[in-house]
Amino acid sequence: MAEVLVTLAAIVTCMAFLMVLWRFIKGPSPVDRIIAFDGLTIVSITGILFAALAAERGIYLDVALVYALLSFLGVIVVARFLERGF
Amino acid sequence: MAEFLDILGALLLLAGTIFLLLGGLGLVRMPDIYNRIQAGTKATTLGTLLSLIGVAFLHPEWSLKLLLIGVFLLFTNPLSSQVLARAAHRTGAHKSSSMIVDHLEDDLGEKP
Image (cartoon, rainbow over the protein chains, first blue to last red):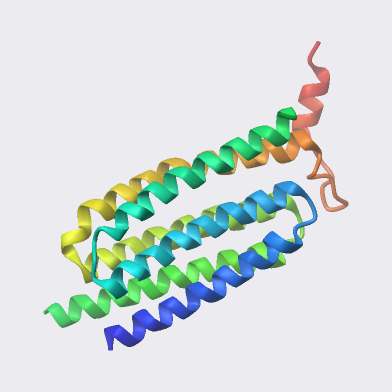
């Protein structure tokens, strides 16, 4: 029962990833693309949670933490770049 | 009892991913850039937090790391949302026919 629900949740996460990716490719302005990039990284953190659940290894959560830190820095840097020019 | 906790955790995980899906749907469907920021950051924050709580029910021994990730997301997501909104206003990418009143631009214009 629980395994079926977790598999269903993983499929829903893949659908959410594809929808955000559509906005990332289409986005008319660069700011739209950064918003979509932020969404992609947040969805990817949930994806890493599913990888940790599938492998039964808690060490993968450290990867999720570092990934969240680096993606946050990337979003801030690109947003500052768009404001100031460089 | 363990079976019940497993099913509860899986249901919370599914609810969180449904919120992620709704955030993605908002990113695709919303007409304006500020509406997209709203959908793309708030809904996904709630979805990720619900997923973290669900995984904590499934594996109670991972709770500390999951709490760390959750607190970190609670700190950083509103910050990145604010920086994105400011970048949208300063680059002028937000101008569209659906946006009529812009009090921030009026305030900036009145400054000596």
